Image (tube, rainbow, N blue to C red; front, side, top):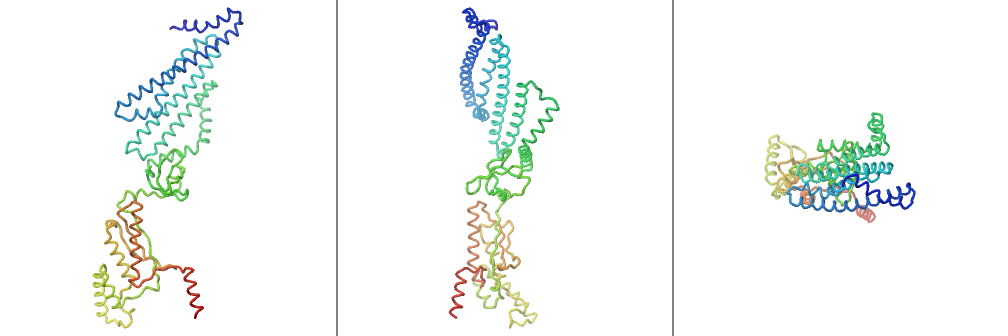
Length: 426
């Protein structure tokens, strides 16, 4: 059907009303109103038909392909948005023909169609971006990258361009001039300051590999302690160990200090670093009788025999008076316990011997002498790690009395009441 025929049909109702004696102005108005109703009805029907046809065709095509990219296109409503372009093309073609008698309506509807086309292009672009993001997240190389941040940045630019174009369509004022762009840039910088900072931070986080999705981080400032589940333009989402969620501004990842446990997770062991506080008054030199008693502990028997021979040989060579234990060289119960703890760790199959292992003194404190255990467990899983650590210190705490040592402990209310009771009885 050519344009002349469409114009003739669109004016039938107008001609009928004029022949019935109605004023031409009213006949034109009612004819335009009727044409609007007819066009909108036809377009809505065609939109439903085209949408169902294109969506079903696209689904059938995606089911036959091996790639998942087209499947994500369907999920992101890409076929639905494409289907809207066909009715829009029909409207674009019919507007100047049907509303030839009303230039104002023609111009108004053409502007509305152009605005809708701009919005539709942005939605199609968003659908493609989301599809690309979902497709890349399937790839092992991109799964831990902040793809959401990049999508959000591109969408901000897309909506910005779309809004500028719509303003130009509605007002006729060009936004391409340098003055307008300068003013718009200032407004964008002011409104989207946090977004821009977040975008810059996302790039730095990705390029420098600071944080990945799935990393365990501890960020005391925001009370976050758990796994990173999402990195987007403005925030980083962390699922804490109590299953609550904490959102952290993305920019804070490069502006503030936080702890990332990825290095531990990728290493061959998880560090155990804890101290036992020994009561200083329980430390003593070992007598011959004490040494003989401790030789019954199989783990340190060879060490005691070898060490005691060296001590005795030195004391005899230098004619040391051993009436007092302080004279000459002597072993101490704390030193022997340190060796026992070291030997115990080396015998423990749960400890990684290829990593650093040490039992050491720390500086004396008002709570006693700290004996620090420093080693790495083979199993890095949290629950198993805690069990390994607990087993080590359970054993060492239970072993301390065998060396005539005491663990420092602040007095409790029961201790104080016992002392007071004893003083009262005396």
